[in-house]
Picture 1 (cartoon, rainbow, N blue to C red):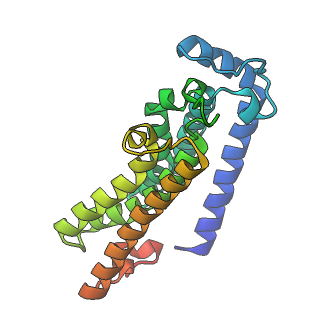
Picture 2 (tube, rainbow, N blue to C red; picture 1 turned 120 degrees about the horizontal axis):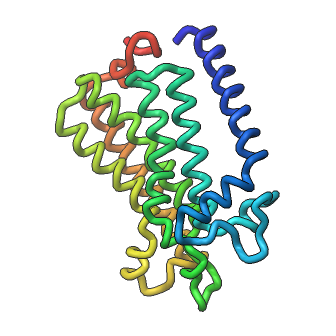
Length: 230
């Protein structure tokens, strides 16, 4: 990728998204009130303020998740607009946006109503998003394989299943909880969630690494020349 092109686009992206973020912060009060009208759950925690300073303390988990989804949706649109829609930029946007979509779909699970009475801990959307984002990185390889046809179909399917499993697993702790002898809403449970997600992520990259070593195909062959490929 041409260095000047990359830096100019990154600067444009930072400026546009920075302006939007400031705009959102100034008008966060009407945004929060609008969310309260649209959705059945509370946007704020008890005693919270629409002109919040600390979102973790003043926004409800549901309100925080909706805000994350909204901001990442705008981030994706700005990124696609600045870098132009192409088959490399879209997977990067997907990588950031997919975990946010999963959070929104599972929004009820992260409610304060699901805090365990025995541990005082609920399902952490912060942890679930981070782990899902880590798992979603594998989709970059999946998109490259499907779009540039340099890898066999079976490899793409297995890679897709492994990447999808890595991204979804952290988003279903309530279902996993039914299989454990202890509550996953605990320090021990959080450690288990992290370890299994990391195991899935490592399994994905071991599979990819072994494939490229055994076939002699270089990952750079999956990228267009403009972005550093062969």
